[in-house]
View 1 (cartoon, rainbow, N blue to C red):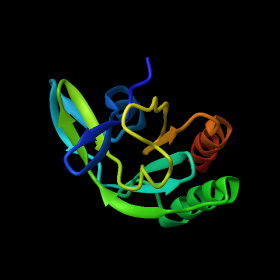
View 2 (view 1 turned 120 degrees about the vertical axis):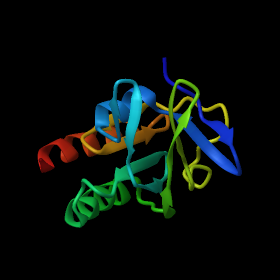
View 3 (view 1 turned 90 degrees about the horizontal axis):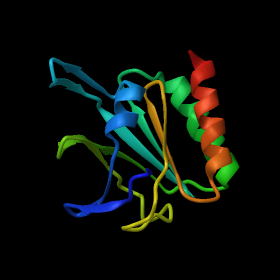
View 4 (view 1 turned 135 degrees about the vertical axis):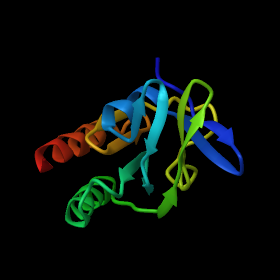
Length: 139
């Protein structure tokens, strides 16, 4: 089941435990978290990119962001953010989510790619799939 956007602190967040693990944004040993990625969130119409700054080159970030901007004909905010331990897993803070059209309670499908999460609103699934494909081809 897709998780829903929730209020967390002064902004919005999404529970991303399984996708964060699949994308390599967290590292764990013996059920202990040993690394949480240093991330930046890029906001576009109906689309959020959560990028691991330590494992994606600047050139690859530019390619991903440019593709998203051209496909959505938008870009709102690029902001440093945080991945946090929450409950029995992880959540990501989503600055710019409201600008991108996300609201508390919205279903937010999250697609993992190596060192990247792509969060798409309804109607943005094709763009999200393209971004995931591009990221996989970058490796």
